[in-house]
Length: 199
Figure 1 (cartoon, rainbow, N blue to C red):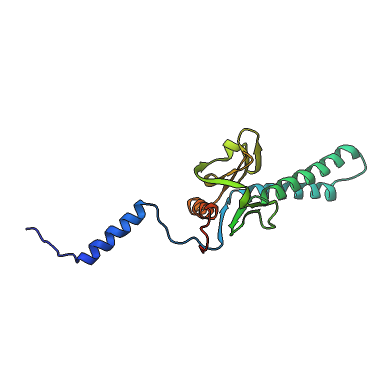
Figure 2 (figure 1 turned 90 degrees about the horizontal axis):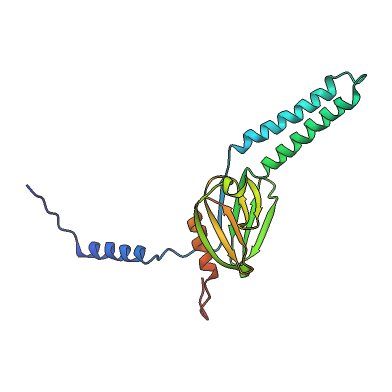
């Protein structure tokens, strides 16, 4: 037995209009300020290793007898503390990255202190592309990266990202969650405004 249900014509038309809008890529108006971020929790493990190196250096300095073999001991203490500081601050700076897009600028902040930071005027941006798979391996590691053939990147994890094409021919890549939305907002900002138009 077959059951047939009557569907109101208004509902059919509404569904068709939504399908048409989705097909043509029409979206809701972009927000005045878009923010996004990406996080790499594995960086905390490296930060703990750095803290352990520092603790080892301090333990060597406190518990060792400073009467004989002074030079090797000083080198061990300084080496452990220096290595620990480099690993600790180097990893904490790239635990996460935050991206902010407003009417005129794109700003990238790294870590809890927001350093390093880069602020790019949108007037310097020629276009934006969605990158579905950005990996540290492609850029030689995590962090703030530069490669002559690729450009500059901020990579804190594997996954989606935004690639900006600059008017000077360089590119800038940043990993961020919901990168497609970021690209949509940036493209909307780059679109020439009609006289008297409002966003």
